[in-house]
Image (cartoon, rainbow, N blue to C red):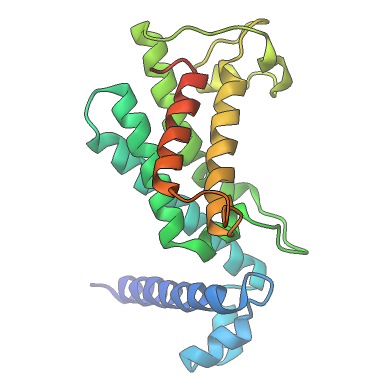
Length: 227
């Protein structure tokens, strides 16, 4: 391996190690309390050395956010692929994988779907990773449309969405379409349901949470015409 290759590998390993330590700090202090100096202390590095890898706390936050979105996307995509050809099985598997990831990684879930971090604005580089999750469900809807197993229920609510979004997603772009807005409702409802469970909002309300989530999954499928 060349000297430049060795340097690149060392840099990649150190970058990962810094991010791993920061992820642990995230669980202890939350995103607001995340500190590059504290991460550097745990690693036994000078703060100036860490800044060579992450120039600011926001750069580190962005890496953690992208990593979380990608991990969520990978988990849900894998569940979708493993579920077989049946669209409803794929839908349920994707929903279940999303909830399982959230329950296993509550602090990272809170980072991407919880309260905004004061003073932090997510850059455009987070968009592609964030889109991986909803694109799984849009893909299932799109395949069901192509197979003729669902039809656009109409009502025209897609006019509330950004112009051209449905075309980008491969969904009907007509004045009476509603599949796009229904897909957004499914996405936000899944995130909201899992967030409620993680943050204790179902305490003294929902006893059988597995069953409740399964029912919610099927109801959201029905919302877009899957049966």
